[in-house]
Length: 248
Image (cartoon, rainbow, N blue to C red; front, top):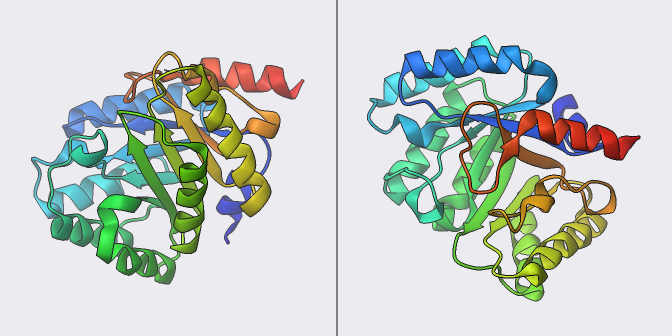
């Protein structure tokens, strides 16, 4: 585990903001916003499913450009597929090839790998990340429902066993009990495998899971600077203020 991993897994949740422009011009504006709001965030996520109209070389070049412009911040690389709420349309084979290209050719710190989408090729991507010094964030999203507590616990265990160093669950709650169960599973995961679990209940109903700290705190929480990229996201500055208030 490198120093960035240690920083991410200690203390209050770190605030992640996403860059998701579809052109170099849009992304440069987002980078400027990151610099203007630097005190409101800790980590930047590149949502590269917005780059689907680019060639592979253009895609990789743009990722490295963002990494250079934001060299003082940890960078998460995410290609969110349509299976899990993103706009990415690549096949399973294309998904594997893209992630392995990014891992070996780009200066990212953390790679978000979809646990279900990865399927049979998941271990190849995880191994590639380990060989190239990238931290593995395994994620699973469900925009229809929140599984039972026992199912979420089993999923965390399987993700951890598959090589996940940071584990992210993001589900849609249908009632307040679903939100409470998400907070419970973060606490259970934290106690079982350490402070490297992210638990998000999406939408307005689950907004508190993005702000909760202490015993129920995820290691990362996702906010926005310009445009929210997920239902229920809160502006990064408001999240920071809430976390600072909790710390006091």
